Length: 433
Image (spheres, rainbow, N blue to C red):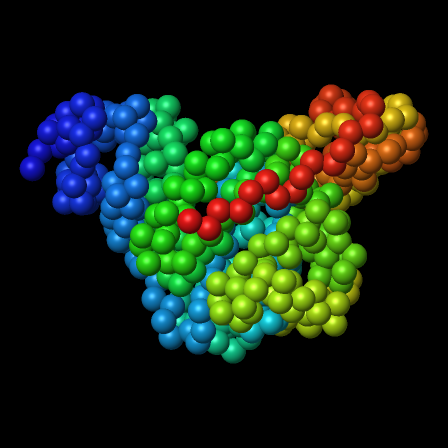
């Protein structure tokens, strides 16, 4: 078998066999297939697309290119949740203890953020002492004992994906649904979950800017998961504005705590209930979404979910006192309220640029090598559809520098005030097959 033959076959619109796809993934991972041939192959996929069978075979080959986590020794149905990214997306930090508190094992492997999208692992590291690197045996032990643990992804989890993603990034082939879907799902399958709930975001702050692309990506990933033997479903959610109010690491942890106390932003709370209900049903702990939601509401209102979060923090070396006193996390030197310049309704918030403003403060990374300032960020006091009076606080900036003119102007430029508009629908679609 020769790589040039595979390139020609896909270039001419042919369907690749499982053996041909395995040959490519194995050869590129071990270095026997050079970058220039892999680049040409990726471009043929970009232009000629792939069938569901091809995408599934590519996903499985990538998943099996390195470590495949065995979670079979964890009691119960393990349900993973993955978001395609956004701004202020704190759902995992609330979801993990909440879903675990109703008896669903949450063995979660999460990633770091890059650019304007925050990573769950970075946010958790804002908790003093919290350990995100856990040996697999201890990871399994913690989930069996307390139903929940969140760890960083293994260095050898789906190495083919890591190598291919770096190549896609420099060959203009990132924006390909077969390649996006196989990248995400290869890591999810290698992570060992029995079932998968996907949060596919769409809008200004998401990777999928329009609903049509988000729907196709969601349907593709659901088909891959189901064909791979994982019960999979997807929620398509709105990311035209940031989720919740906080954008930054320590302040997002504080927002997660408030949400677990029942005082969180309405949109974040609702998103947690929507995703969590799906997880509980897939785990077989409830027979309907309505029953699952009632279980989650009771766990949150009774304080059980908050106690589970404290246990999770303590189990992973963190200081659980931050739940009652968030000031034990890093605090910004300057907290500056930015007032609205006019009276009206917030009718647009450009999520991506607001996320970039937080990144400029130090809340995110421009490159993988950058360090994060956990204390800084941005808090929105008004969301789309809300009335605001001139002089009323629109945004609060948390910073460690007094030079905030550029960030302030950026926020003003990306939060529009005008005539009354409706709040955007949070859940745009649900894909189950």
